[in-house]
Length: 428
Image 1 (tube, rainbow, N blue to C red):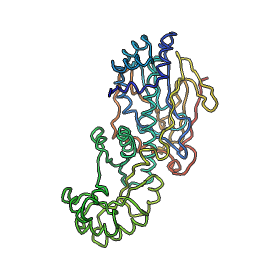
Image 2 (cartoon, rainbow, N blue to C red; image 1 turned 90 degrees about the vertical axis):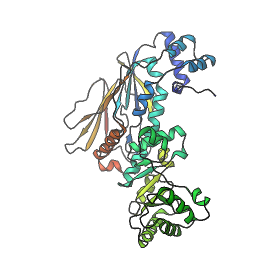
Image 3 (cartoon, helix red, strand yellow; image 1 turned 30 degrees about the vertical axis):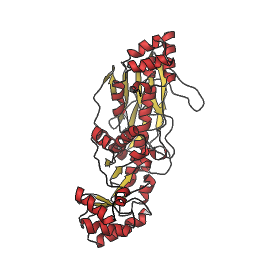
Image 4 (cartoon, rainbow, N blue to C red; image 1 turned 45 degrees about the vertical axis):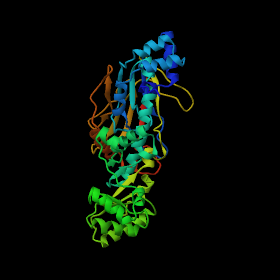
């Protein structure tokens, strides 16, 4: 089976436009494309930008090799002129945008791509694929972190998504504040802390539950987590403490009425002298399930399906639109899909206390800004060269500070207006 380079993430309609533009002489017109969301996902009051750190590396290495060119020729997708152009493709333009970990709202110019029409349009699918996926995951994960109120969350959704998406999802969840992941590839690639325990299959493998627990403790020591709900949770806890002793690190509960079970488990652990043994709960955890357990004696959560699917919003709804050609604003007037022309610049206004009050977006200009305001765009790529970008840890801290800055109403899980109002000032 042939293996093709990431350049074939390009959609065919993009190459159709490139071919036509090369033929009619418009391919080299200087253009500005913008990534933005027309609206937030249903019920959300903010979105989280995630993916630029991955994206700039993909764009840096975006090439059409001989295998890709041969496929496109053989399938009749491109003519010789386009094939020659693709063979020499290198992005030589500029990319600016919101920092990874920044909050976004309807209309926020999350990313601005400047260059020739052909070199920019061929990146559309790649850019939207990365940003829509990662921003959806981070936006959902950030809500879960808020709901957890400081309790750690483990990302454990790799079995519920594509193998490559699983790695990206673990990164986005960690960016949003998750404590660790069970995905070892994400740990190796991005330096994310990893953690994990055994599944029910390991308990069922052994003759009885105490034998399974003894095997796990013998291999990993007492600083491990024993899954206690394969049979009876109460007896499972008794077996766990009998085998590991009262200094067992943690037990995990993966089913049942977690609110009631957490209370009973804490009482039982304490009665057995295991007052420092933690309780980890998992099983269909989303932000709402986590919020319902806020008052219960839960020490850590495990989130899987909900986080890797954006907790009901698997895409951030971002679009990639042409807004400027040779310095001239261009607009789309389609019903419910109209755009504001011209390259945008954005600033977020803050009170002296640091609370965000408004986002101002100006077309073909720079908003007036005061000492407490913050310009939102930064350079990612300049003249085709990647500019130094913050580390994942720095982006994680950036998001934490952003969430502190928005009014507390903006952190509610209930539906409502965006956390702060957005004003878009069109070009005059």
